[in-house]
Image 1 (cartoon, rainbow, N blue to C red):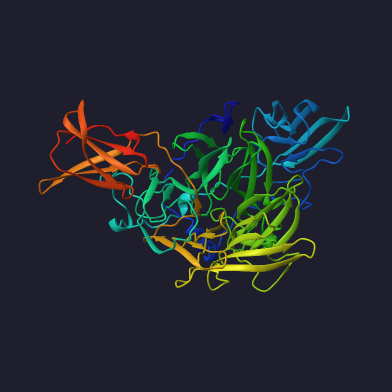
Image 2 (cartoon, rainbow, N blue to C red):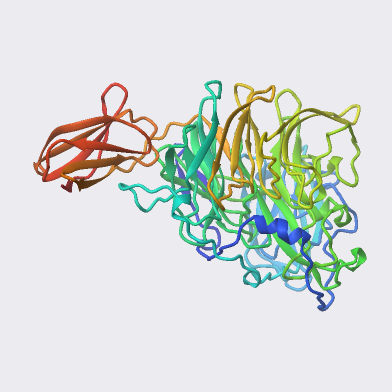
Length: 626
């Protein structure tokens, strides 16, 4: 949960107890690709009920009212810990809310208003039971007249997936795949190789979240040269994805997801927000008893955040050739009120998109490997009251009504209502983004299973009136034909350049708008990064600079670094006979994350100062003995 005070300071809250994500997992998102094509053993289990509604793609707006509600009326996939979300009228207009379960009878609860002033969540004092029907009654005052409303939904049978049932092999350690620093030996970020670099590239540093390598996982910033700027190593078993710069309260912040990644190919964790001094100012949790998924997280100007959730639920999928006692991974997104942590909206894939639209096979699905039919991986809320979604396993983009939740159009996939021109069809794509000029950028994976010869970034002209989808441009990796079976993103930079993170392939590339490769780099070995971005960034760490000293052949060398700092131009070494008697003894221009400085004479005590471009002192390290 997340709060934003009037002073725009952010503090972390707890909703229903603290969430600590420390469960071990050596798995990677690449296993999701393996799972899609792997044959699972035959499975039989007791039949379970339906998980799809009788009427697909129903509206979330209650008839005769302005209220958009969740869970969706008539749905079968609600959480036992769900809130009743009511958006479209101030909390003062809502009254006489009564909630009862077919098994748990009447529920007491509290109506809590959203900080935006346009609705409230009714929060139950006790959970519902799986399989029961929940009925909601109330009134909403419209034009000074109370209008009654009622709706119902069914609580899902959660699928208690045994995540330990499939584990990845241990990644062997390779010393050369990691960087090593004398002043910060614990960091060990991936080593980077820059193979192409131009003076024409855009301004900014690179933002990645490497994992699946021999070193620790964690969010990472690096310069165009390949030099490290910042690395935040996470404990073993905790991964991170989607490091990016966003705006909160008019200030730039770092956001990323962290948690565990089970082999079923989604995330269970939380969203982290740091300020420009790398101090944690927020932790955003999913609501309704869920854990946040790794695929998407956006902070909006309205004081909300949008995030993904993957929720395996039991489901009879025998009509599709699967088991009657099977399971489906329901893809959700939630809009969270940052000031209260309440769920304003919740959209679920099984309520709006048919299970049969998937290119994944249900025949091998079971409760260990649920039928991941949709696999939501990007959400782009548009100014026209619509939201653009990308679903990997239907190979389709969806435009939905942001209020009703109804799918308005499908672009690609089995039920496309757009005519796709030559080259416009995407396969197992990620990161669909609507650009200000109306075009849509997409990272088109092209597999797995393989549909295209290689992955690519594409720009699409989507004409809503003519119902056409035309390929405007595509960006392929030259020389090495990269084929990313999972993950990846495409970012249009301020100067018009195109930046691509190749996902399961550990590469990052920048192209001019005309397609010229301007920059190319990759991580060594087995590392991956779900997405990689380029952003301008100024980091001013709250911690002090670090140093280490070695003597070899009578030469004293001091190693200076400052994890996360982007302002340091040079280093000054202080030395002296005591910690209280230090004077300048050497200096050197900054040469990368860690700068070696030769000190002409032995010193009993040492410290370093980071200097800005004008020679001002930005920070001073602790003092060590020489």
